[in-house]
Structure formats: C-alpha cells, structure tokens
Image 1 (cartoon, rainbow, N blue to C red):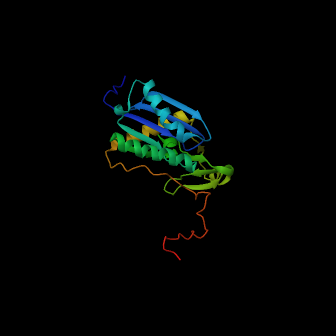
Image 2 (cartoon, rainbow, N blue to C red):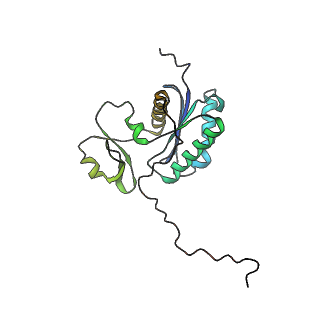
Image 3 (cartoon, helix red, strand yellow):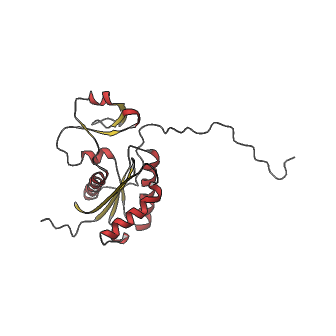
Length: 205
C-alpha cells in the first residue's frame, strides 16, 4: 500500500456544467467527494458544499495544500463562479490554485487513443485535437476526426481527475499561474450599444 501521508491535500471543484461537484484527495488517494445536479444556484451552494466536504473528511481549510478548479469549457457563468472562488481561496489560504480543463481531466491517465469532447449547446461539442486550439464543432465534425470521442465522466469522478491533474502539475515543479476560464466561443450576451447617458454637473446651465 502506497504511503500518501506526505502528499498534499488537494481540493478540486467544478461548476462548468449543470452541477456543483468537488473531490478531496491526499495525493491520489480519495478522501471524499460530493456532487449535486443543479442548473443554477452554484454561487450560493459552492462554498458551503466545500466546507461540508472538509468537515466530513475531518479536515479544515488550513489542511489544504492546493486547489484544483475546473476552467471549462462549459457554462460561462458557472466557470466564472468556480474560478473566482479558487482565486479568492488561494489568496486567503496562501496555497496554489491550479486551473484544469475538462479536456485534461478526461484524458488524464488514458492510454487509449481518443478525442476529448465536451457537450455544448444545440447538439454541438467542444473538442481539443492534439496540436490544435480547442474549438466548437458539430457532432458530425467531431466524429469525422477518426478517433473515438471521450466525454466527461460523472461530476464526482471529473473532479477526482482534476485533482490528479493538479497533483501532476505540482510534482512537475514548474510555475503555477492563477486559473483563468477557458472560453471557446463568444458569450451570448453582447455589450450594450446604447449611447451612455449624459451626466449633468451641479453647475450645468
């Protein structure tokens, strides 16, 4: 049995789709997971969920060695919620926060040729072909790659994989940059085009 007592405790969480999920690992050893399906409300639920996960494992925030956070692709608002939380927690706790894409989590430890794919709106998928930038394509285009498509596992397993990816980053010893959302397509909302209102000063005549 591998001794993991010296490995960092990593808290991984993700809200990039219709879920709020987290996993707590010491090295590669799973300590606890938690997952809830939800289309909205992640912003209010995330921190209480993480606190519950730590308590159930008999740990506190001060026991964490690193954070892993899902950066997408996926729901724009959901991704922002997790990434903002990870940045704030990392700063408060003085530990690194490592952004992990869903692509990286899907492909972690896989030895079978595949194309990582993430469901997208209107029956499309996000893909990340080797050597190319991630893109949004139709399911037909993705299937024409010639590789079997590999989709995300259930949310709990997804966050487990994210923690393991983060551990690999830590073990590599390179610089760890603050996590940033992985946006592949423009947001549906466009900036307002109305002319800004005129603000009158007190001495305006």
